[in-house]
Image (tube, rainbow, N blue to C red; front, side):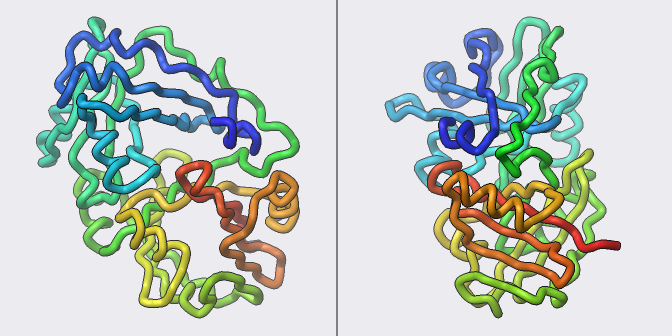
Length: 288
């Protein structure tokens, strides 16, 4: 949390008391109640952190942490009615991994989707009167991490993952053109970058991307080998990638992968996983 604050993402808030969920279908109620959540807003997107304590009371979150390390556990979707969302998900063939409801019917459901989607999917119905916009802080000038452009999930079989998302109504998916117009490319093995296969779609305003690494060494491939399928990076739109990279350097962030076109557009990935549990990236599209 302190790291995110240091790069301008915050303020962070305590999640309401989890004992408000009186109807729980989870592996361990005591384990669930011991989870500690913090959350912050990046524009309209809520970013959550979970502290998973060791102990005899197992939770899906702790099982994930022990198997994959500190990574993004789930992507959550807002629904008007959680029970209706459950029924729709069941009709699509999804199985529930955890479920909780408050007395007013609001709450959450997590689904067993990681093996096919590369990440756990969740639906949530907010309680009456929840106003997240009131907790949004305008990002300070000293950060490039203001406007989320996309979330990128690293997978071993991109066609399989895209087909699964399509079955859930998330799509259509389009291949991301290979970036053969880059005039500068810095990374562990620059030539391996061009073997990355990308597909993308939109979910509301942000893009959802899938990436399948090739044979050469890349940060994406290193992540997949070390942690399994999961959210590799969160991408942020910026007006100038060079200026954003300079700002990030002033914040103490090192670049692990960089690409530029002749017009200055391109991307920079930062070495934030050890502190943030996810890689942060800045990017600007070429002029149309």
